[in-house]
Length: 307
Image (tube, rainbow, N blue to C red; front, side):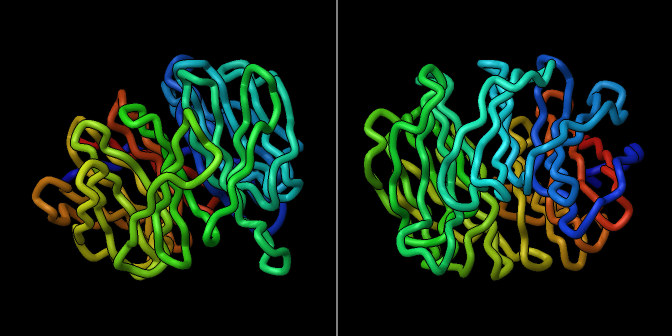
């Protein structure tokens, strides 16, 4: 057994359809930030005691949440108003709110340059609206835009190559953008499975882990370009997190409602942990090896310890 259930955290009830989306932990303040999309809120949880603290209001359609421990910043992608929010993590004071592209979702951050990448889903009726916006933290301004070959999902930053990587749903690709020269796509990896969705990085082993809608977990080696199938998932996935210490990947599958746990070294499924139907998103505290599965039907977060 890998994931051991510790309990659950009650969160505010949903105000409308939408449930939860991305979540991230700020380790400096022991706070877990959860995009409560249906409430236009970010729910704040004390990850030391695993208790709900309060909600941050007025973030219309909030979908993406990202934390920078290095700069103590919290970023939100507010898909319902085409903005991003920048907050002081731990205290939640808003630093800025900026207009970006259409329906922002995915987020990745280069703390050394202070550069935030925002992956904008776009509008199928608006040509070339699937883009990334580049936001400079010092200027508090959008300093560049790159048109993507399709609708983006999630994004990550690799400090070794100083590059951002973005999942593209269709055509199934991962594209790389140089953080030092972010005016165009630098490299492209074809993914042999439909619908790249969740994305995370093993910087030490130089691998991206991509969870695809077709129910496949794929690895991409960033130095060689090799693409390989790790294994089959229990269904269409969403969020994936990589545990570098234990070399495991956690993949949230909303239907049937499970977390698939993979040993990525042996390319083997360790276990499939039931959560709740519709539970398509996770958070991961890498310092405590704790996994939070967000349960939309009962507006809770299930808390697991990985041993």
